[in-house]
Length: 170
Image 1 (tube, rainbow, N blue to C red):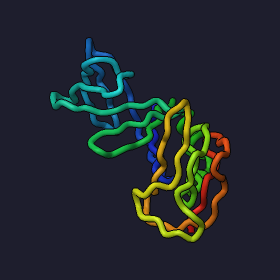
Image 2 (cartoon, one colour):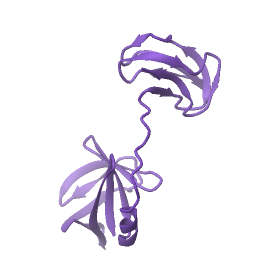
Image 3 (cartoon, rainbow, N blue to C red):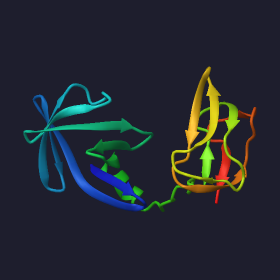
């Protein structure tokens, strides 16, 4: 088995194995062994336990194929593969995700009840951009960074689908 991490196209494969020893797991990664004991279920939102006697708290989120592990502010996507699957995956080209930082996307289906900016307007981080009503709740969308509004792709009163572009930034 191999553990594969993928950060911005840089893949790292490390040989790994897991053995069960009573109530703990003995995880061997890259030649080092880590005895892990969990307090509660791995599927809990926050996973508690200890590694080699030192306590830890992490979040393990199952995504389609990888697991997203969040620990002390760091986040990494990890896939646990058989040796052959890791060998074949290493041959696959990396496809960078599209840069969506120039767009405001609808996070949910709903009704666009307010557009608080105009084309050409300079917006500061945290400033209100739009309001979407979904399931009788108003959701305020704010700017993630300082920017200038280039285009409005949706108007007030329009029904939005999830990930539909509402506006574009310069």
